[in-house]
Length: 322
Image 1 (cartoon, rainbow, N blue to C red):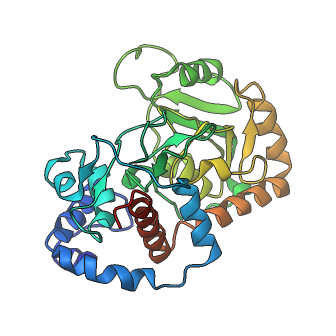
Image 2 (image 1 turned 30 degrees about the vertical axis):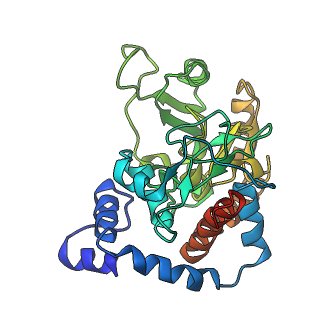
Image 3 (image 1 turned 180 degrees about the vertical axis):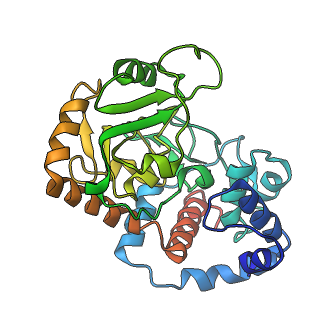
């Protein structure tokens, strides 16, 4: 209903993941009374909850026992009044509105790579270790959850690897300096500050331009590799080292050499992998198909809504609030 209203009154391309459309849609949602969402909650949770949904709820919210909230917890009502980080705010509020405003939550916004002391909602967490206090929600999805409709076949693309991105961390800097002049790669940083007058500083490439290449490299930045979702939805082959962080995309469940090509942590085998899969096209295509199958679970909006609501409901139950 909201999307139809905008499309009828404002010229916007809803095939693009733009902040303009995102903010307009979320601002219009604020016009809907909260009572509408709370009345609809039970109806939405009556939908068929299969084993896949339950597994994902347990993956995002790993808390097994009851717990007590600490002084950092805020009511949903105060969250609505005071929070300023808009993309994270709107993404969490989308589901918080189904619950009573007096319920309390703890949350951390931004690129989180540590585990909080109390169970909290966040976008990202370490894959390894006791991470049950890190409860994942689908946050900042306008940046992270982009999928593409790639019409170009793998065999018709350029047989080299491509990567563009900001390089402020040592891991990315070492990678770019090592491969920026490789004949098998088109690698470059797109920094807007810091070290700019260097040969590895290159022009930005649009998604469409990157989709012309057979191989897309995913490298973690502050937390996860933000290009991984759209790269795996393309007809290119994703190459990356084993991820250390995960989001709603459940990067920790990705299987090396099944969903993506595993690279060494220092990327020493990058050129070797490019050469191999440029020739072994059928093997590459099988991995691309596996990546597409993995992506499908995130495209069902109704199911995504149910999982998000159940993650929140489990949190409120385990914290003794409902």
